[in-house]
Length: 357
Image (cartoon, rainbow, N blue to C red; front, side, top):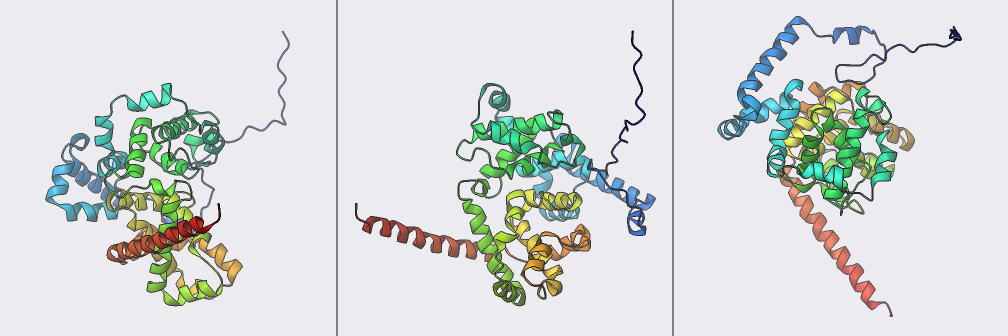
């Protein structure tokens, strides 16, 4: 039997180092990074926080609804401070209404995955490797992470054939699968898109992206009201929100934002609704306002897609985001948008009728 030859030129790659969320990390031992390592005090504080949350939700979430009814302001404040990572998956299901959907639909997910076929299967397969490619769960081609993501997206495309599958949905499902099972992630996706608790999100993914258009219209006017100087500069440089803000809404900041910040935004998003996306967007522009108003077009586009690290610190950005009060104005701008679009649709229909047969 021939002896296997050892080739000394073959290099064995070292195991990839990952951060606490499972993303591959680059070595960086700067003083700033080292200072951020957890102290014993921070660890004890997190443990106290965890105990408070466990008491609040009860075993398996049994006390959650009762606590929310009794102390809604405490719940809101604690969610804004961040849900403990060990409880995040369970709490997300409780606050989104997906746990109830799951209990009311036993066996439905399995039916959709195993026995149904989807017209979007090839599109889903093509896009899967683009979803969180630096996360260990999704790195292996056809591995367990990619299979789970495929199953959830395929199941949703069958469950809601009008929406089917659209590329940005992969980041929503991909984020959820890091915190819960396939079936739980599927029903949370249903809860979001169909509106179990808040306004339905499916319009973000329908043909023509109608809800994205509405949100960008609302955001642009809000930004101009809060930051008129920046709004004027955007007009001069022909910058519109579709150039930088579409992905904020389509993926709820999960596409290119630092994962710790995305998680904190999702905590609030699932409890308070889409208004947090507007608030965070406004906070980012406000935080960088003095730099943005002096940049020409090319540099402005780059800056709006690559915010500085300090702007991405949840403990700096989110308190600024919470300071924006947008609920009433969002409703007014929604009505304005619907009125404007209603007139536009009526005008197009009238023009079509006037055309000779």
